[in-house]
Length: 247
Ligand code: PGA
Image 1 (cartoon, rainbow, N blue to C red):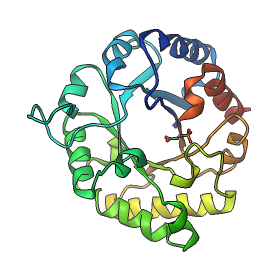
Image 2 (cartoon, rainbow, N blue to C red):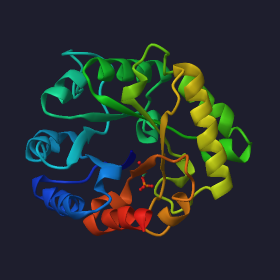
Image 3 (tube, rainbow, N blue to C red):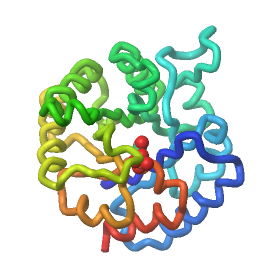
């Protein structure tokens, strides 16, 4: 199963559902639809409406983040995995570099993953090195650290997807070389296999994915799908990625 996950970030109002309607229509007619799943993470404000609307359709709705506590608390503006589950979210991103930059520590991320899983949300755990770390050949070390400091062997690995998103690639149009990316994804899978003793962990790539460069990524078998930012805000661009992946 491949994944095409659209991360809307701070984008969208109720009527933006038109974008998802077009993607849903494409999916319903696509001969390849059994091979992949479409997930979109709109902002918190739209999760309930969109989840209800797409409940019996083909698009899964997720959250871009969740708070590191269960149930309710006195943390202003926080939204717990429990609350997300109750409004219909099926997935949540955890550890996106935007949120790490704002102060998410490994301890916080561990709790986010723990409580998300407890509330039956599937977790898309994001990792990635920055430009300086890449230049200094620290990528493998950084990624291993990001994984092992957060994911524990007793977490339900069936509900964890890892998204490799080099920070220098997000929103910049820059992408890793095919060789580098293949090596990195295989290394990530090795680390995950060591933790979970699971045969085939799911690892996605994210960072400036578009309808053109997806043709390069599709040659890397180890990649199980994509986390798509900018291009997920246009139905045409998002559909082009899927079309060109299966062409
Ligand atoms: P991008 O964003 O596709 O616009 O580079 C990816 C992400 O931040 O998840």
